Image 1 (cartoon, rainbow, N blue to C red):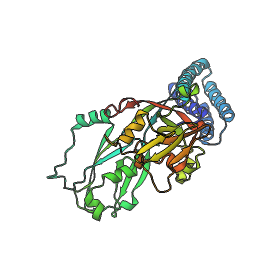
Image 2: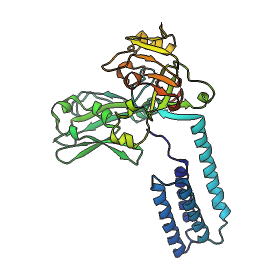
Image 3: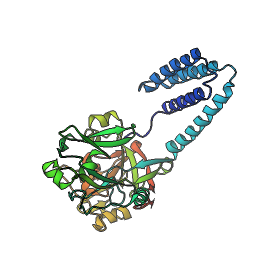
Length: 382
């Protein structure tokens, strides 16, 4: 998933906010004709901003026209005030984007390929299907849920049937709310649609056993029940790799651009979204010879020595060792600018064993620190 839009597009959106603010503050000074002119020029600017092929020069020209339309609307208004406000916003954005582009980038882990070192999104189902009355299912109070949301990133789901109906599980689908939030719709034969926060596969994990078996529910019967813990949110150090080489054993983030073995498994919507970001442990660097002999990993003929590898091979504390798989590549002889990416949750990780090596140009940086939530892996990543 691509995390960033082009800089000129972000600045364009900030300009629109500034224009709206300007119009509100000067509504009593702007004549009707000038107001309509601003709306027309603003509409043209929005069209260019929504055009995925718009160039920076074209957007800059439209931005100048929009700014001048605002200045002309209030002849006595000191244009420097508008410019100063916009410049403050732009400088703040440039600084923030500069930090993210060259130093530190936040990254949220969506999958469980690095568990138990790092958590992806985890659903914890409560499979009992008693009616609400007489059920032994309990949730923390409101304050308790707020605390767990902060500490664990935890969200509770307790979806109960509003009437006798048939749940159409095969027609569950994800929808976007306010463009940023994912929700899952659960339709019924009656036409009723239940909506639950979260992506489809995690909501599906929370469906009660009774609903999974026959899909027919009575009023008051639970449909989905349990809680979901958000994935660990980490800070990625993008600076160090500009002056030092990636080191074996580090947890690192890379983009999937040009790695054909990954991209051919993407859905059409994922391909349209551009390159995705993956997080794995750096298993091998240029010149290394790797071999997976479950549950062990051998590097240059010796058992891997780095702590991260040893944890996986120990088969303790949630680690299950390195695994093989049908069609998986279990030996690597790395050339220049080639790296191997391995998930700590080897049995459930789509990594270099399945799609090959990571080119040096794809590497973003090393995962440095878990900053949210506080309750699982907060702190430095090892």
